[in-house]
Image (tube, rainbow, N blue to C red; front, side, top):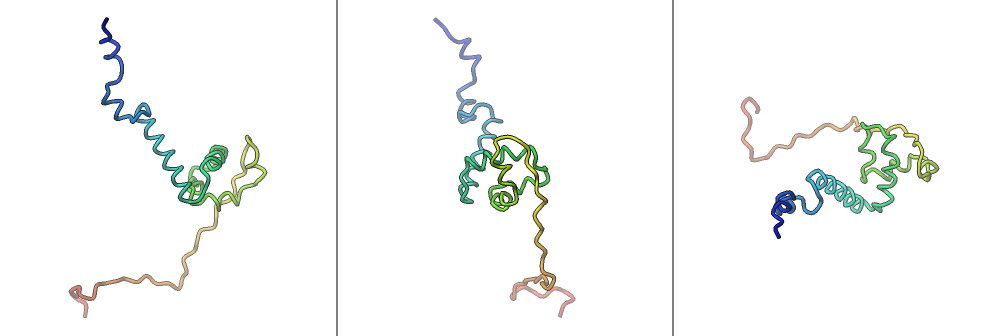
Length: 126
């Protein structure tokens, strides 16, 4: 009995190793992104499962130019601005709150340029 045709039709062992048992390379990239998001949740003290469930609920209604507000680092502040009743529902639209106010730099600060003391003087300066 011979199975050469079956062996030739499947992926090579090298291709299986490159996929790290996750299937095609696009699946490996997606798995890496999800694992990175879960790690970021843990670093920021969030439980990944409820975070991901809420993000999946909110994402279709959230403006693309404000996706950064949904990152684990900013999630607590964003979640505080959302309606608890809307978050408690399994399905349904979310009212997107206005963007958070941007921090204004204080006007009395002047930028400081640091130079090494042992650096040679620039031409034309005393």
